[in-house]
Image 1 (cartoon, rainbow, N blue to C red):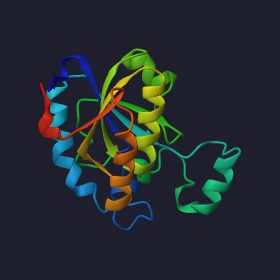
Image 2 (image 1 turned 90 degrees about the horizontal axis):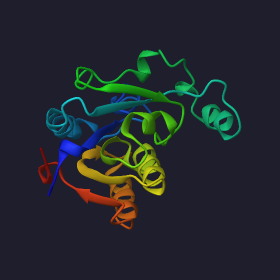
Image 3 (image 1 turned 120 degrees about the horizontal axis):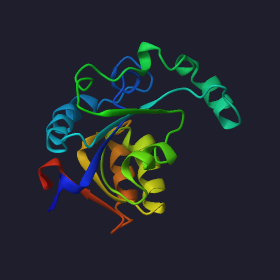
Length: 182
C-alpha cells in the first residue's frame, strides 16, 4: 500500500464519446468505473487531472486517415460528444484536452512535474490509458493503473492491455481501487 498524498490521480478521457453505449467507441465497461473513480478523487484533494481526447485540427498524417475511418468523431473540440460525462463533470480537477491517444507530454508534465507518481484511471484501457502509461513510464513517472477504475473497449481488450502494462514493474504496477489509500 502507498499513500495518495504524494500522487496525482489522472482520469483519462471520461467523455460521452467513450461512455455512451450508442457511440461506436462506447465502452460496455464504462458504467462500472464511475463509482471507483469518484471514490479515488475524494482522496486526492486538488491533485486530480481529467483528460479529454479531441479530434486533431488540422488532422495530419495518420490522423487524417483515422478520422476518415471514424467520421462521427471528426467534430470540433467543443462538441458535446467530447464533454466529460455528467457523473464525473463535478470532480475537483484540472481539465487537460489533447488531440492524442496518450496524454503524457509537456502539458501534463507541467502540472505533475517531470517524474511524478501517477494513479491512472479511465477509458479506454486498450488505447488512451495504455498509451499514456507507457509514455509516462518511459519518461520517468511511476504509475499505478487502477484496474477496476479503467474501462476497455471490451473486457477482453481491457485484460490484454492490463497484461501488457503488468510487464513494466516497478515503473507501472496494477492495483484495485481498494489498494489505493489516502
